[in-house]
Length: 382
Image (cartoon, rainbow, N blue to C red; front, side, top):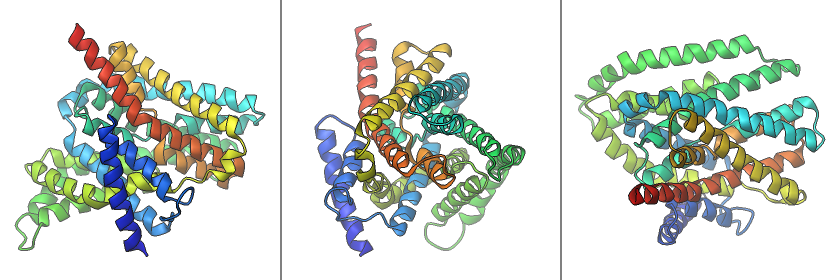
């Protein structure tokens, strides 16, 4: 039953998160790992059902909405140059080396390019949680990571649409780009003009938590239309959070949405990542899995760090930004699903890449913590 699985997830996630913190790691790492233990790969207590995926999707949407609420917009503006450089170089390096790896293992040109694009994707939902736990989400590094993630998402999806149009799929590059331009133009206009009005209209209603309901409506509507436009739903939720952060309701919304999210939906999201993992297909290609995992971590870490360094960050800060971009998360899984459907990935390579995505996700929290700890030690010594 779903309620039993939810009870198991919440209990295990909180205990595993606490153990992770006691061992000096972010709580999110424990939640990710306990998902593997609970899932079909180990104990089989929790199954990767459609309804669990939907609850998980709400969790990541609320997580990014909260990140938008917490964003320091002045810091965000100051890191715009860094976000651009990080977003671009964080794609170029993984794309080039991923393509080379694809050619090396015998893939055709189109399939090798697809592999490079998949390794170029970034999902910062895991990084957001790790940064929150370290109180670094509002730092210049945190702002650069969030900005770069938006740029990364747009560029990777456009590049993917271009590749699909060349391989004969029914995809029109001009339409893809136009949809994204329309989405961002409309989203910015609504964030500026409509969001404050909606919250003010809901505030005097004689029902409980009307403002919080209004904020959730805004969040889900932005996420939905982002998904329709081919932009990740988490980007739409993040923009909605930014919009609400400019209103006088920011603190009330933040406190109550955080309670809603972290009491059930966000833990389910983190744990379900591990639950979804299936090792059987990947273990037949263990060396390929190890090689691509190492490549995925290093290319994004180095590429994004070089972008931050070119923007004037110190090396310590640059590698902190690079670490925050390592996780491929649900964005790469969506791209992998497209590859399997269009025969650009074989079932075995798909299984390998799912594990690669999991590895990048698990590596990100401790990597971020280690780099920030080193950065702080260097600053104190200076």
